Image (cartoon, rainbow, N blue to C red; front, side):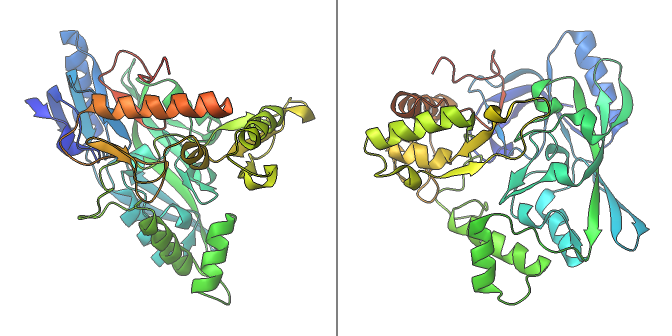
Length: 370
């Protein structure tokens, strides 16, 4: 265990203060020992993955930050058409996707290029281009932080939703130790997202393949600076800072009408909107949900790509990404995020919700009040 460890270099934003105590935990036993110690010392404890979806307070974290660094992949072939991959929490995500695609296993190809670790994927139900990791999660091995006992949670127990899960709604209850994915051998790539389907057709032609879908996803993400690469001016970010708002259809209609009235669109058809999946059980038909594009709302609220507020700004390639250009603070970034959220709410009546996890703040959403 180390003292006074800078957290900014361990995050993709390169922002935030120091951890009073820090531990790289190679296995569950090490993690349990550290968490027990923190409890005995009366210190708060937090977990860190790849640092690609976390915003650290400038004051840092006055407690223990533990990072799961254990690696390992166990493959089990169930039948000719499926394999179970049990992956340690510290395993880097995109190389795992690359391995699965190379093995001819479908289910995660659209999640190519996403930074971070396997252990983080169930927390926010990582998704992209119409595919969500919840579709292939068979179980999640966790440590109950209250009892220090290990258990396996089935998908239903994880309560997955759009960019959400039990782990996100009840932070501090569990530590993810490993994730088991059920992957399909010889499966067709998931081309549900129109932009991806068109691009795959243009790039690959003929019958689409898992390898072709992965290549195309990486190309699309690079064009939006959503692949972290040295030299990219937009590389210091957490990807999408806000989730796309999912609203009851009636509320979405009001937002669209406000967009037209404000001159942000000439016609309702110009406002991007998508069906948000099946209505939850027990809901009336009138409760159908619609997903709006947060990036579109942000740009039409007066924040075009490349907007700057000193050391922070909007990505020059993707309006959903807030970026740190260097020399800034977390306070600078959050001030911009509040400004963006306030403008979208005032113009369209839609309140955006942040996607990253906040570490070292007294509240779960430090953007409030917007």
